[in-house]
Amino acid sequence: MSTNLGSAHVTLDGSSDLSGDLKTNLGSLDVCVPAGLGVQVTASDSLSSSDLSGAGLIHTGGLWQTPDYASASHKANLTFETSLGSLKLNPAGGCK
Image 1 (cartoon, rainbow, N blue to C red):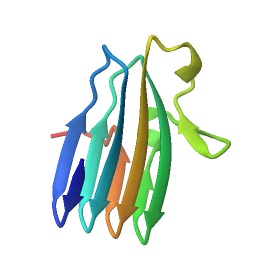
Image 2 (cartoon, rainbow, N blue to C red):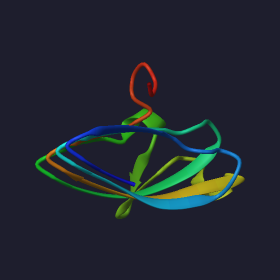
Image 3 (cartoon, helix red, strand yellow):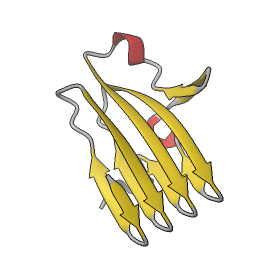
Image 4 (tube, rainbow, N blue to C red):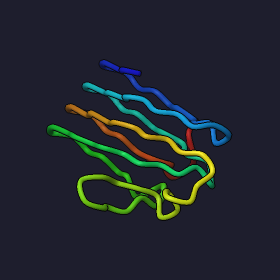
């Protein structure tokens, strides 16, 4: 998914495995992660703001992961690229 001069709100499915690339340029992206979904993120940003703490991700090596990633029944492997924008996982108040 890609946004350019806009905003998007995405809710991930917690009942299956998934992978994807999410990009935003001059926009904002809110991603809601359901409880129990193991999430692994590779992120890059340029003059932007990324908040990966909302889903409880911790930095491990070059990746961000949920603490239960290895044992989760379902996993999401995501790549985030943010340029002059903002990215938030589980933003305060939820995705709208």
